[in-house]
Length: 77
Image 1: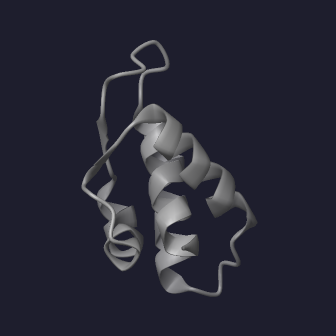
Image 2: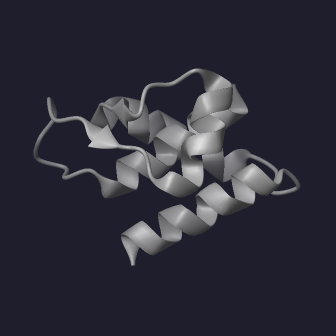
């Protein structure tokens, strides 16, 4: 479950805020977490927001979480 939320968080950063029905692709750095959680390769903005919020509270000891956080930083920069 933590991996799923991390993945969704990454996707939310890549989404345009005005398109609520639009789906966004999960960044490649978060694919491992998405696979663990059984998520599709695209998410809605609401799903992505929940994932980002959860990723913020996850512990970085998991290398997949650290990679996903780095990928999100790259998307938002």
